Length: 384
Image (tube, rainbow, N blue to C red; front, side, top):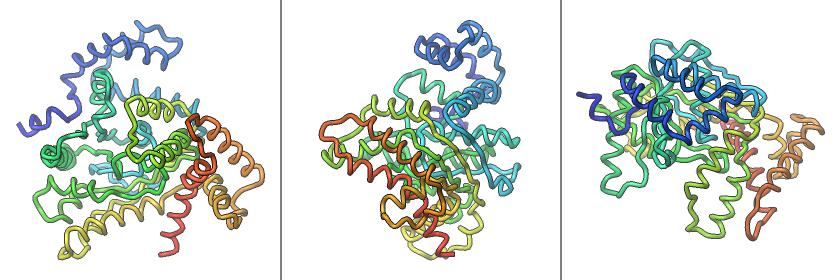
């Protein structure tokens, strides 16, 4: 009965898999995409293989993971992880990470965990991104639970309570790990900061104090570092559009373009750093603080871990030197690396096609995207 409360947001259960699979395999758009992603394999053969999968884990490991490895092979140069020693295989965790890519942040986490012998995670995703029925089916089959967006104000609180309650149930009763972005939407400038509203939502589903409720979620901050962000030019373009028109908002086609670009664009090296679970640190905090102060302090603790865990690349140092003109980090890259990064930057800027294109503004915004991880990491290191 407890689980049934969450039927409209939870991932699909294994007994629902045959019905969902039949819907997916009857959808022309899904079949077309699946065929392109598995070039050279006849569609009927793919359908037969999918129908033979016995459970969700097999679906992920035998169908989703191979496609992800193909993406890494074709559109990245490496995918690595450190910090596995901080994880206890017997525990469930709430992995909270900075948010770089709409789809891949959680997907790459899954394959890295599977490589280490751990289960995949349940994934929080906004229902606004699942614009086709087959997308929602595919996501929920892939252990996604839905975050309801765009609700009237009266319904927002009840939806947040339901979401938080489900997440507590998942961690504490199902012993199933989850992934959650540190903020709603991606940080366009890569100046990653945890939204306190995310932490307030996590608190709603608990029955103890703020610190007890959030500590019970076993938060593991995860630092995600992409050498190149394929969506960097789209993010810069969106910044100018918002600057020129404060009422500008992306539409569904914009979201689809960002998803496609993130999936198929070149990412270079990708690195995940698992940081220690912060539950013990939370329980040592002064419980008598005002709630708002507590949430602020918890957010800063998550941010500190994420910033310290960044894996830096030559482009981060080059971007910083390009912005301030001081060449403070010239020892951290070669002339060839600088020329390559600046050529990449120009190539990305050239992709921007918009009225009143302001190249200096766009270039500065893109440089900030690559310099902010370095800036934030150095600030934490200087405070230690």
